[in-house]
Image (cartoon, rainbow over all chains, first blue to last red; front, side, top):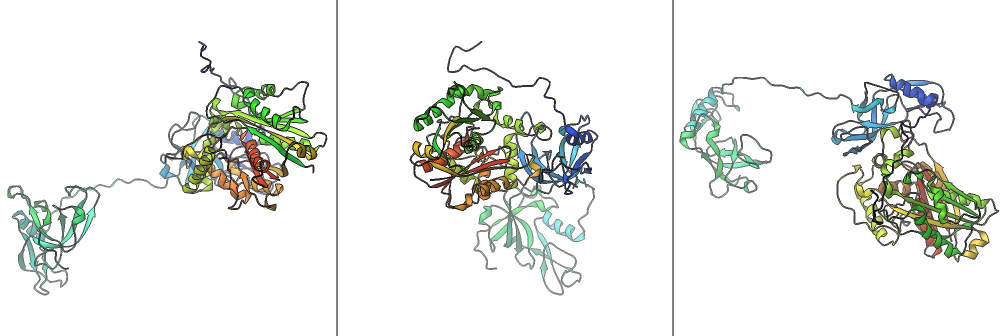
Amino acid sequence: MPSSDPTTLRARHALEFPGGYTRTTGPVIGRFLTELRDGRVVGVRTAAGRTLVPPLEYDPDTGDAVTEEFVEVGPAGTVESWAWVNTPRKGHPLDRPFAWALIRLDGADTALVHAVDAGDVKAMRPGLRVRPRWRAERTGHITDIESFVPEVTRIVSEVRVEYSLRPGLALTRFLQGVAEGVFIGCRCGGCHKVYVPYRLSCPECGVSITEEVAVPDTGTVTTFAINNLPDPRAPEVPFVSAYIQLDGTDIPMIALVGGIAAHEVRQGMRVRAVWVPEEERTMSMSNIKWFAPTGEPDVEL
Amino acid sequence: MREIAVVAFAQTRHSAVDEGQSESELILPPLDEVRAATGLRTFGFTCSGSCDYLAGAPFSFVSALDALGAWPPISESHVEMDAAWALYEAWVRLQHGDVDSALVYGFGKSSQGDLREIMTLQLDPYYLAPLGLDQVSFAALQASATGAERAELDEIVRRSRADGRANPYALDLPEPAGEGAEVEPLRPYDIAPITDGAAAVVLAAGDLARELCERPAWITGIAHRIEPHYLGMRDLARSASTADAARAAGVGKGDVEVAELHAQFSHEEIILRRALELPEGTRVNPSGGPLAANPVMATGLIRIGEAARHILDGTASRTLGHATSGPCLQHNLVTVMEA
């Protein structure tokens, strides 16, 4: 119904050639499209020896007719520059985000304009190697190449093997102590250094260690890191993992620090282990929830 | 070479929406304005620039003649190009020496269709148009090849829109904002706005120009050059045809105080400045340029008109108007005017 309001009077109008507009190709473009239908890309040689892809009838540098020599190029090529379409339009060759690109096919001296189905803008870069993805039904049309796709440069390998592990004698002994709320260390008979966790040889002297020492559960933070990525072994993010030198030992032990804001943790801070309730303890480091500040003055390291 | 000058220039108050005027209704006020300014009712030659695809009707430019009064028959021509090329044709026609005045006009209503896809129809029908390569997409390929810094592009848009707000004929567009891409690397504000509008210029030769106007804007150089159409055959980061046209028009023979550039995308200004070798001191697009109003097919003529206006009103003595046609600055026309 025509509107009776003069301010909104409007008509739909379409310009269209029903059935499409028929164009002859001429021998140069026709050869390119014919080869394309057969799944090949060809360029044409100019008198100066350049290879134009797609072929033009005249050399853009001189205006002279090109030679009759056609050469197969690509099909792989290199992206020279590109523009990323996030929201494809109706007339675009792909219905998902893609790149328009200038692609220099191997053996060509000019670049071809086409679409690159790269999946993600992060996959695009100058120098990207791409190959055509051909349509199954080809008719001799530039869209016989549905799009270009990146060459294969990486694969994903799945790796998973399963094991049954025992902790070794020294760690077993240490975990026995942890089950009872005690840190078991050892003193080297040669250098007199006290190590915790317990071990059976001195890494410095290379001799067996025989003297077991019970170590207090208080110590000093020597250094630490604030972790912002979640870890199944940590209670929250961010969390602090620290080197804690237990009192009376010579080597720090790695443990979590908690009960304090991450940004307040400092070197020289005095801490004490926070044990889970006795009835929940097992032979596991999870017996220690974390180390929390004791409130004592910091130690000069 | 005959001395030819721009002696009058007028344009519509451009609109971002279809205000309901037909093309001939749109062009009538600027025609009246230049006829009043010069006192001329008839011209030795008349030439217009427009694009039938904007209206979707063949020979739509013929109906625009209704605004002219083309009876008894007049000597008239048309280019299916920006009206800057109609001005070039009129300049060539005046060189023949048998007529002394020419009327040039251009008009376009890009609000009526989808300009991005209408511009696809200008592409070669074998290799580019069937891909559905739209105007913003091919411009984005050029922006990408140019590798311009985002801050530089933003500053071009900011300056253009601020100047546009001060220009009563251009659109009122806000400060550029928003980080979303239209087609990466271009953002929506890097793209000239959809605009309806028209413009008219009167050229006159020698003594007639001096009679009609106190300070004619003498065209001391005018030239156009074109590059291969196919985007992959060119270095998109440069405009060799603009540089060639600038040399032929003698741009470098003196200072350019004002340059009006037909940059429909922010990165095009960078390419054009470089090709024209404009020094820092040249004011670029003080009208706001196409980024503030882009009545397609009149935009290039307006660049020449705006550049001429600075000479007509005495605010500059040597200016440059640039116009472009085709995808990614394929074809460029450079006009130098002097007091």
